[in-house]
Image (cartoon, rainbow, N blue to C red; front, side):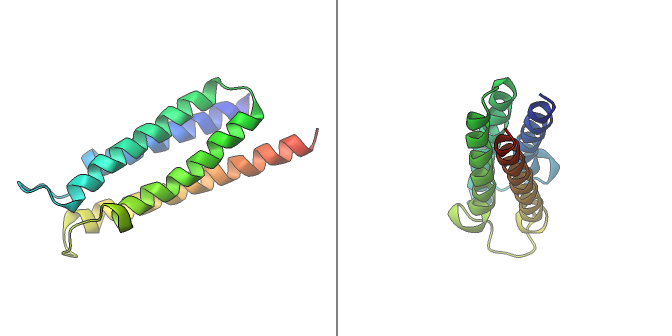
Length: 132
């Protein structure tokens, strides 16, 4: 029960931070033209919503196998959060733009935190399953 609450809260919090990073906390470049960072912001909002939604679902599930599957999905979502600005949607080409200086490092940190959280939960669930 305690594991479920802690990791569900962590997943929801990280999902919300992924949404807030490119929009409020470290906003991407504001331009009249829709540049690559605009599309990265939209993609990160979607990824953050999925991460937070999986966190809410995680809270209500008691089956460890399903929670393990959600944790694996969250680990993969961490890669997606990192892949959007790095390869998929991209960022502005100039190295001194806000999206490169602030948003991208924040998304890297959030991606690593999400991956570590999911990995820790995967290990915990596997160990608790093998102890039975």
